[in-house]
Length: 101
Image 1 (cartoon, rainbow, N blue to C red):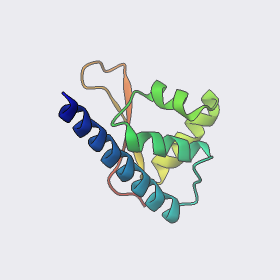
Image 2: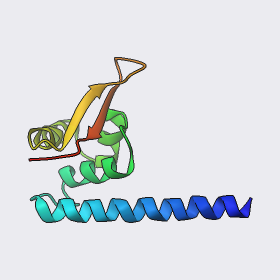
Image 3: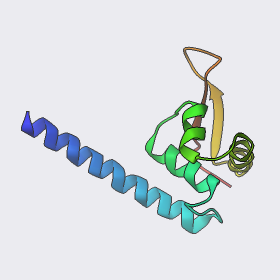
Image 4: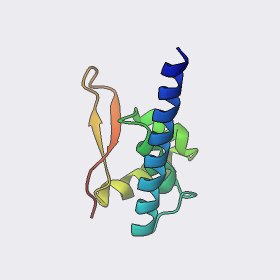
């Protein structure tokens, strides 16, 4: 059981390191900052694969209007996409795109 826990810990460390590396690459190549709503949205998406749009909004800690303005900026830059959930079309999910402009 301890071996299983250490693997999980190592996996989490690798995931965290990957998220930090991806975010640093993002930060160097875009005008967004981690403290902006755009940065918070992007960083949340780095560590959460295709979360519900409501989860992303809560994590960004911004107003409804501010969140959707920021999400729109990221969509126009080709960094994120919003799709209906596969099981329930009413659920909208946000995900990172592999390439941005």
